[in-house]
Length: 237
Image (cartoon, rainbow, N blue to C red; front, top):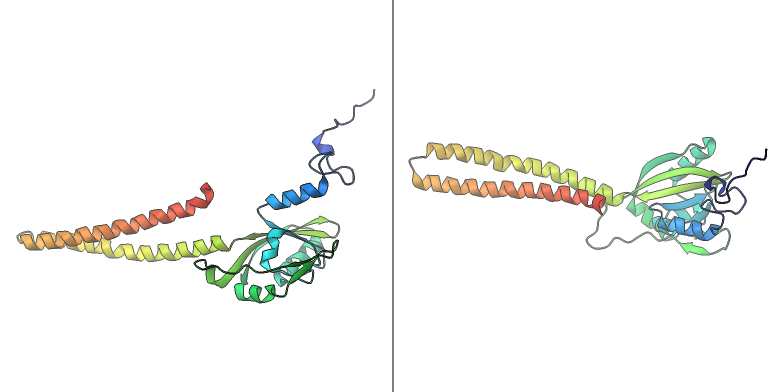
């Protein structure tokens, strides 16, 4: 009996032959690779084991991590060294001072090993009204081996998320402290009204104070609700 071979469009055979795309036998390889990288949420840098850069995605150019076709950030080079030794994928979050990245960004370029094109690696300028936490760039880095001497470095900018977390923590701490003031005042004023039951003017005065403190309490609760909505917004979008 003769066993039937795999079907022409069997997904398990995609990429089995040289220069065939993983996504199908008729898919143009380089064009599909570029489109895949363009739609990925992470930025991508491909290097060899010595941290010589082979490819930089457009999203990775803004971080200013490359100088003369070499990965300059020591923390990433250290991760790359570990991965090249045992082929284990590693992830870390790195905190990089903005002044350190900005100083280096002015002189960093990437020279493509295939086309000799030079690409500037500018660091993004801060815009009015936009700040980052503690003047720090927070990058989540994932490094893994993809070929004999090629390593993929995926980078996600976590700075905005960390900035929001810092703001949220500070706000919740402040509001928690502020809530004690109107809550304590309302309790004290209610007790005072009981003692001044025979004095209509005093009752009206303290009742007005209770109303004012209640409004303050309601405003603080409203701010907490708005904070929760802001936190949920990225997940909903």
